[in-house]
Image (tube, rainbow, N blue to C red; front, side, top):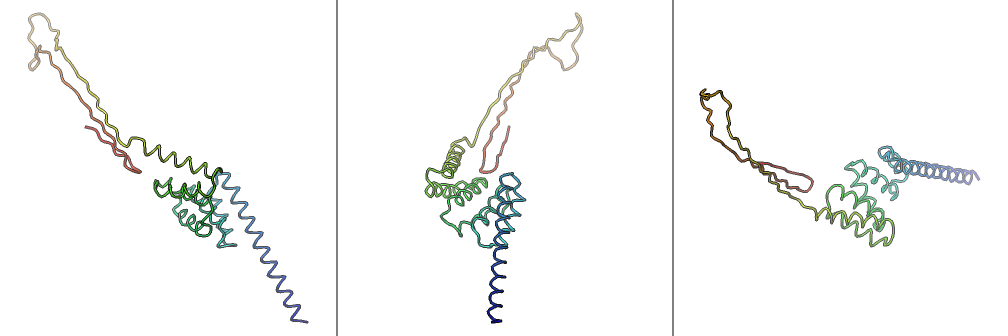
Length: 201
């Protein structure tokens, strides 16, 4: 009888602990989503880290942590988003967020793979629409000129008319000859991926 009471008490304790852990996880996830929607990404990241302490292999918390880190440009975002992809490889939101991350890091070829997969996984949805927008932006950027060349030219003409009293001699080194000169400015620009280099002559 004592063993039965002890076993029942242990089950209740485990059940209560499990419920408390689940409630804390839900609370942290809700707060994190609210912080993301409010644009407070560092605070959101802290909430999702706390949620992951309750459920270390949770795909949603891992994804949202990656999103928050991505929005603040934290390099840990890539690892978190890739981990979310391992946990849920067919999730269109995870693929979209990885595409956005690589797009912002100027790794356009890498981003294309994830955008195209998002469109395949969720055709006709808001997620695939967003992926299409990024793919179009990539094409527009690629089509934009990476270089430009400009020439500016000008001239100066001087009649050298010197006003002096009649019969006075001109100062030494000053003649009454007209003269001119030409001026040219050559300016070029070439944009490397992620950088811009300019020069002028």
